[in-house]
Each structure stands twice: as structure tokens, then as C-alpha cells.
Image (cartoon, rainbow, N blue to C red; front, side, top):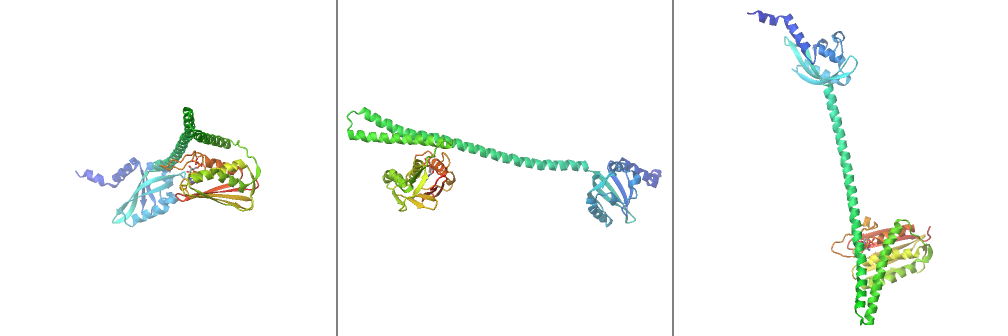
Length: 395
Ligand code: ADP
């Protein structure tokens, strides 16, 4: 009955069982002596590392370990020698052809008579696994980058869309403003003409008053249509600048005279501060008159009753500076960068100040054509100042 037991403990039988287990094992197995020399390696291990047994037996394990992992592996072996019961770590071995093969190592010391005699290493080849996880990591990084680019593109598309929406909104606002602006004078022209027509006994005085309203409204209509045509001509580069020498002070006085009635109608005081002498400049007098007229007209339009408007002219060395300031409703800081853009109008809910958002576009274009410079300063509720510099000798 004891024969089996005897056989089990027979060293030869035990050795051949161990050999069979070693050969059947899919992973790499190294048996090292206390000094770290390889005393046994299984054939799958040899196959993975492309070595023959003679190349490897009695070599120190450290010789096989890739440089980058040597220090870490030495530390692990020392820990085992010093009594650690088990250790796992990753290590790359050099194959016969110098390729690095990564293993996940499980190491256990073998004790004999209380002393460590050998170390058994079982290593799972994780090179392929690592390549896959590295690939996944790379893909993840690429995916994050792709997502970042997609979100940038999405943001850009949204910006483009909101810009287009804004442009469309501005266009439809412009069409509705223009229609309103055209309809208002037309309605008075038609209304007053019909009244005159339907009342043959209308007193002459009243008839002449109505006629003058019709004339004014007709002029306003013509002005508006000219505005639209001017802007489209300016935009197409078709506008012609007629250069003439003229006195800018006289021109400014003309502009003030042309607007004084509408200022007085709102009890707005218009004052000027001009030098005694003439300031002769070269430029398109008509266009500059229109430009100053538009600025003064805006100052009156956006200033409440009893406000003040001041026009200053300065005779500088090569240029003239004209400053128009008002104590009006001002332009909010947020709108200031846009006021020279076509169709841009400050949104003032609850107020109905007529306009097309074209006046300042015209002003800026004319100043630019004269190689001049315009700037604006404003504070909501306090007032606005437009300053223009024009070279005295043009082009
Ligand atoms: P609009 O025909 O609407 O007056 P403009 O191009 O002349 O067009 O002006 C653009 C906008 O700038 C106006 O809608 C107005 O809100 C603002 N603005 C221009 N001048 C003044 C001013 N002196 N005071 C306050 N706001 C002004």
C-alpha cells in the first residue's frame, strides 16, 4: 500500500513530474539559483525568447533584462533574497535577436532548510497586450484631439451661423426701417395733396403751408433715396471726389445755418468756437458739407430738449480738426465699436428715433476718401463727441 507514497517522494519521479509541468506550461518559467544564475528554463520560454537552452543556462538573469528595467528587477530580486514571500513586476527580456519582449513576472523564492535556495519566475508575455493598450491609449489621445477639433469647428460654425443670423437680422431691420422711412414722408405727401385736392375752398395761407410740408417731405424722401444710392456707390468705389479749395470755417457756418431751425425746435443751443482766420482746405466741399450735416443732424436727433451742442474747429499745422459734441443720450460702450458699420443702429427699446444706420457709414467713407481720421467718444446718458481730422491739402 505504501508503494505509491514511495513513488511520489522518489526524487527522480518528482523531477520528471516537474519537467512535464514545465514543458506543459504555456508561460515562460525560469528557475534561478541564489546567485541569480538560470538553472532551468522551459521550452515555451525558450521559444518566446528564441534562445537555445545552452545559450541561456548558467547565465545571469540580469544579462537578459533590458537596460531600462535592470534597476527595478535587481531591487525585486534583493527583496526576495531578503525574505519577501512573493513579488510581481514587469520586465522586458532581450530575445536572441535583441528584440525586447515584455513579461508580467510572478516570482517566488524556494526555501531549503530555512534558507532561500532558488527563485522561480513565471512570466506571461504581455508584449502584444501592451502594444494593444498603447494603441488604445494613442487612439484615446487622437480621439480627444479629434473631439477638440470637432468642438472648435462646431464653435466656428455656430459663430458663422450667428454672424449670418445677425447679418440677416440687420438686413431685415434695414428693409423695415427703410420702408418706414419711405412710407412716412410719402404718407404726408399723399395726405396733404389729397386734402388740398378735396377742399377747393381752402384758404391760400393754409394751402401754401400744406404745399411747403409736401415740399419738405419730398425733399426728405429724395435725401433718403440719395443716401441709399450714395452708400451703394461708395461701396462700389464709384463715388467721385471733386477737389476744391474752400474755407472750412465758412462751410461750417453754412452747415450750422442749415440745421439751426431743427435745433431751435428742440430748444437745443448750438454754439461754435472757431478761429478768427480762415482755414483753407482742399477737398470735396459738397461731400464734406453732407458729412458735417449728418453729424450735426445726429447730434440734434439724439439730444433731448434744452440740450447743448458745441462745434469746435482747430487750425492745426497740416490739418483741420472739427469736434462736434452734444449733451445727448450718448452711445453705450458696447455699441461704440459698431456704429460705423452699415445698418447698425443702437437698440433703444421704447424710443422711436427714425434712422437707417447708414449716416455714419457715409461719414466714415467720406473722411477715409479724404485721408482723414474720425473718432468717437461717448457715455450713455451724458453725451457724444465726434472728432474729425482732415488734411488741409488733399492727395
Ligand atoms: P441712423 O440713421 O440710425 O442715425 P447713423 O449711422 O447716423 O444711423 O448712426 C448709427 C447709430 O449711432 C444711431 O442709430 C445712433 O444710435 C448712434 N448715434 C450716432 N450719433 C449719435 C449721437 N450724436 N448721439 C447718440 N447716438 C448717436
